[in-house]
Length: 152
Image (cartoon, rainbow, N blue to C red; front, top):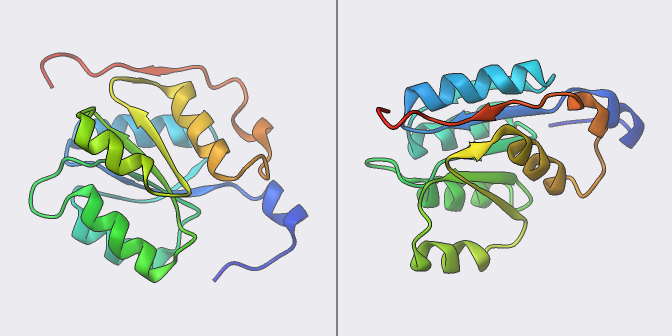
C-alpha cells in the first residue's frame, strides 16, 4: 500500500494502468501519459486482467474502456471497487448510449472521457479524480490530441 505524507504524494509521479481492447489506443495513450510524467505501471486489454493488475500493483488511477469482449469495463469497475472502494477510475469510452451514460452518472468518484478525445481532457479527468490534491505542473505543457483514425 502507499505511504508518505501528502507533500510527498504531490511530488511523486502518478501511476496508472491503461485498459482498452484496442491495442493502438493503449499504446498511444500510454506514450502520451509517459510524456506527461505519469507512470504507466501496466497495459492490458480486458477487464479481468485489469482487476488482477489492480490488485497486484495498486495504481493511483485506472484508465478503463467500457466496451471490451468477455470482461468489460463495468465488470472491472465493480471488481476493482470491491478491492478498494476509493479506487480512482477514469472511464475512457466511445459508448455514449443513454443507458451507459445514465449508469455512469450513478457511480460516485468516477470521471468519464469520451472517444475520440483530446489528451488534455484525459489529464483534466485524472486531475479531477484527485480533487486538486496533485501537482498539476507534473503534466503542464502536454498539449497533445488523440484522434484515432477512422481505420482503427
